[in-house]
Image (cartoon, rainbow, N blue to C red; front, side, top):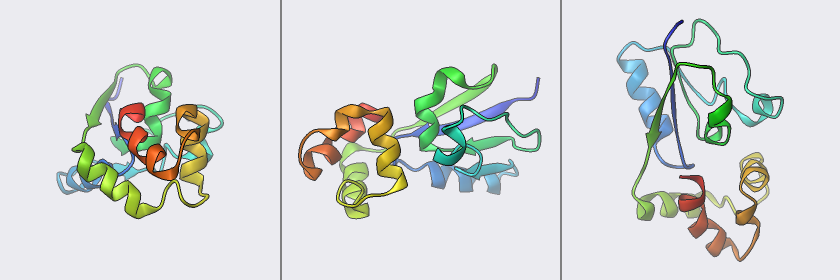
Length: 126
């Protein structure tokens, strides 16, 4: 069975950075190319044989459905840095695919003001 690596964590936690590092090391790694909201709504898609790794915060919601033997690397960024970045991204102040995905998979994020929702995401998603 081929080794698969999934890099995941809360949004704005550094999955894109880790994907770039893996690519520089020669690992074929996508960043939410394979495991993204559009594809995950149909269930976890088959892992492409040419893909050694995928970095996707979306995949955290599907951990139990990943193919057997998948190595999961959970990236955790400091709460202050992650929340500051999330606030700047306006995630809970505008409608987006990312916001809809989070609300579907972590309903606790539906309650409260945008500040409260942003503050909850780090603990809810991690």
